[in-house]
Image (cartoon, rainbow over all chains, first blue to last red; front, side, top):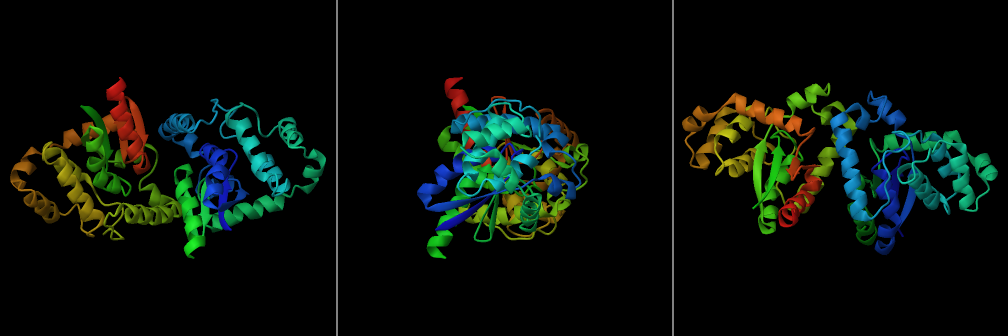
Length: 197
Length: 197
């Protein structure tokens, strides 16, 4: 089966509509999605940023929030602004996403995004995260025991080595696509690479 | 007629495919394009950048060149990389674009972009610019006499006041769209705003 690597960060606004749509778009194209959460903090820090570029560059930030509203309206994705803070700390959620296992990572990730961008919840709050796991019929203690800080570190290092500098990013067959705007093109590329090699 | 303001910078890579396609896409939608050249230098300087972000952030720059190749291939737009330098100095070309008049600005602007991104020519070279004017049957001396530095300054100040932070940008009915990826959406917005108020 054709595979598309989906690199996302729970604090990233444009990763939200990508996460909510990717399975729905990939499935009919015969493309299997590998969910690859990572954190942008270390990558931004390497570029000299200590905050989101949307906070560092206010004109860009104002535009992004309006653009996100338009995208979510067009795609019929719930959106409630502002989030409890921006960017939210995504470390705990990303570590949990890597610990829930392949069968649950997509559903857990969509739950985290919904909490952040549609429910004004704090995604670094232990109670909020625990409730998400329970709703998926997962045992929070078992998941917590499977958490590995090193796995997220390695994943983020891999993203950086692939040339990833923002989220969402998509990789198929050695080709990198950046941004929610490239989701359909990335899926097509994955499907065609598999079909025509 | 519905009107779309097209804000572009001759050094901007993503403005190139937008400039080559905008009239072809806007016409059947009943949208008239106002060509609004400006320069990003002062806007970037206000954000603390003394160079293109694609040079300041190399991972982003590498991605952009590959992405531009894919876009131009898909849209059947000629592309020859690298340009003679990046970013090229666009000041002279932008001042001339504002001086050639409404009847010629689209054709002159496409000629400048083609020189920059498909012909590896120096768009700050007087001979190169003069040849473009002659090819449009314009009198280079008359155009040079019509050049006003203040017009470009005012145009750039207007862009900044509109919240523009990059190029290409499109404005219709008070709504700002940023990036070649938003060209079709901007045209639709202009057409629908006119139709439904």
